[in-house]
Image (cartoon, rainbow over all chains, first blue to last red; front, side):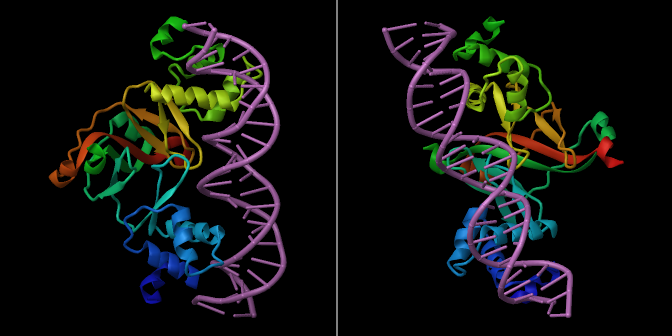
Length: 131
Length: 131
DNA sequence: CTATCTGCAAACGTTTTGCATCTGT
DNA sequence: ACAGATGCAAAACGTTTGCAGATAG
């Protein structure tokens, strides 16, 4: 199992492997606390320091994205592929949108800024909440 | 001056009028503390409770938007007109983008969600930070 | 061997709360 | 008159930090 993460070039401690395993393929966009609680089952001494430390390392390697959807609480998205999000404004469910929208800005902006990318948040009401 | 805010249907206390006046036309996307500090000059007894209380009331009336750019600190945007943002990832300056991008989602999503809108965050490096 | 990570607890900055008093309408 | 706002201080919340001991590479 560790081999698949070897190219991250970070120290693969048991705690980190547990975090990576929890995040792998996870589509729930968990918060730091969600991750902490999940890994706590396996490592009763797990601390938030380790969760944040690991998330910071993974963010720097580009294999985890921070999602700023929830004011006051960060949520995390595994995987390095860029994508957008659709959020139900009622239940806060987040759905990934894997589509590349080409958005062009006006010249007066591109002159003053070097644009690196964009992130789109669609909001709506899911069928469950729409009833 | 109060007349222009009468249709908000909230109690127009002097403190609230000072906050509204500070926000009116403000393009700096201030944080709660920015607002607090600005209004403090006029009302030395101003408290954060009042700032947050007022922002909450204005948010509910749709005349202030909360911007979730900065994890760990909310920023606020006066006005109800929809627009997007361009953020310098270094100095966190936020520039408004008043352009309507028509973004279409795939049918499988529009079937399960009733889409209400979208919000785009462009990120880049401003000329000041790019040097 | 040693650079880095872990775990704890304390510290931090932001936001929320409880409550007595006050005030717009 | 009274529903709702203010102001204060304390508490809550998510996140960060310092540091001693442990461990992956």
